[in-house]
Amino acid sequence: IDAVKKFSTSNVVDIREMINSKLLYVPKVPYDLSIPKKVLIIGSGGLSIGQAGEFDYSGSQAIKALQEENIQTVLINPNIATVQTSKGLADKVYFLPLIPEYVEQVIRAERPGGVLLTFGGQTGLNCGVELQRAGIFEKYGVRILGTPIEAIIDTEDRRIFSERISVIGEKVAPSCAVYSVQEAIDAAEKLGYPVMARAAFSLGGLGSGFADNKEELKTLALQALA
Image (tube, rainbow, N blue to C red):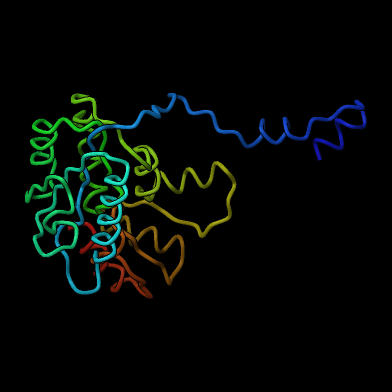
């Protein structure tokens, strides 16, 4: 439409330039495209039947891809019964809990140039967000590879995500962010049953599900806010 309007007042219309001006994203902080020599991978952590197995596989493939580029790999994963902790896969493996205190110890000892958070599932994402807020990555000069922390927070926090969607005018189901059981009940009365409850910074599990009435919602809210 803009091209047609411009053509009516000018004989020259550069479509390529117009597309670039509309779609080209210019980051606030320029990306560092240098290749790190050593990368820390946040592993998949504990596995159970029916969940988290995909992160073990994706993490293993990430390690292989990094090694093909001659990048040294350091893995932190407390679970010995995974493919990614197999002998000879990663250059170095730390069998430590995936919590900020232990991850910082590994970063301090290994001094990786970058870290991959998105191959550790929800545990890895949550750990990365905590480390970022504590200033650990900046303290040791570790670059976040892949999805930026800001994007992780914007999509994992239900309230912020709803605000971002509203800004771009995307049509989605109405929602409310709550911080107590009573707030959840009040929000459901406003939205109308049935409602879907989801805990922030989680892919599912306890506290997530559908509620057809007040009692079902109360059960979900108690689990999510525990």
